[in-house]
Length: 192
Length: 192
DNA sequence: AGTTGAAATGTTATGTTGTTTCAAGTTTTG
DNA sequence: CAAAACTTGAAACAACATAACATTTCAACT
Image (cartoon, rainbow over all chains, first blue to last red; front, side, top):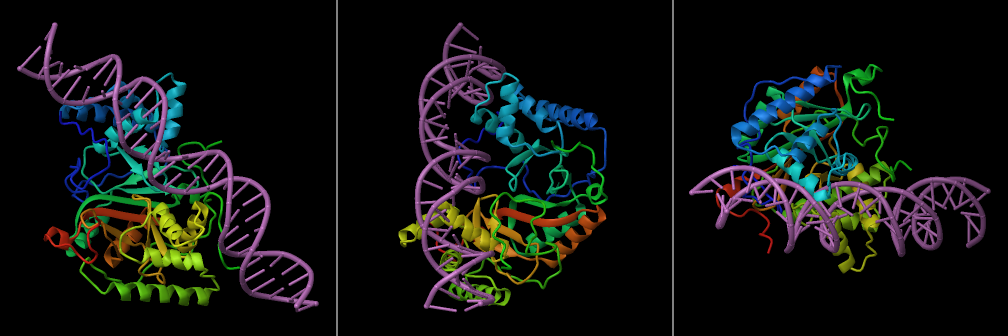
């Protein structure tokens, strides 16, 4: 009921999950340092379950599995890569199936799309209204979602100064993370 | 010679036109207010010509025409839309032709790609190293490139605090511009 | 002017990403 | 249970982008 199905092209009138993408929120830090990723994943999924229950959203099997796949690592996952994964697991994974699941996750703030890479990641702060920065390391190919209050404040100021009412914001930053700069390979092991 | 041809997928080692996307630069203001777009266009193209001469880059006919098309308005133009335009004008406009021209413009900082819309726009500050913000109005469909020094400073701080060395940055903001909020239709006339 | 090597373009084909459409199944609600 | 709303299945297709290789153009140097 509260669910936005939203097939069809995006229109200006599509109501967003978050009223303003540049709202204030507690700083949610994460780094490229190694960490217990199991907990990462488990926590994130539990949180989404909670939010779905709270909001009357249906975390159906495909949607849940899609979310789990996004949380298998901090590497962005492409829609067609996800299709392959699901197919291998015996799902009926046509493109629309996966895009619909991803659309559900993104629309409700449980995942993000990285437009620069045409790929998706789980959201680390699904509860907050935020204007996240995505730090994408070209070495280890991991992505880190950062919500920096200083940056957000400046964005709010810059936008309001110009009388621009923002409804969607995407900030993607490619570069090299600290561990990779130091010659180390962080958290996830290297691909291939 | 100094030209980057860069066919093939982007690698981490691809040298960028700008060493750091978050370098300091003079504030270059522009608004959604009506303006003399002829001058906009003429100035921008003259500047690119100057820079090409200075750097030994070749602004060939397709590249030049592609740039002119980008500057016909402040609306982002898709690659295939450009193909249609060029074909109508009698060019041999296969996809690679246009993508190569766009790649030349983007690589050398004469144009930007908006990943959220898969579309391209001319750069309003081709000389500066900047981390531009793209304000995209969903009403009038125009885009404004803004370089806000405050935002840039915060980004530099946030990144350096986290030891992240950025090489590419993309900040796209969708929303409604001031004139549209006021009920007016700015500069360019409405589509259809 | 002719040669040569590098850069740019022409052309076909194909790869990747995302959507439309309608039928069929599932869940919720009265 | 039946109706309504939501979700998924399935095929086809549309939009976006690149691979690969042939050909042409250009600049530099005899």
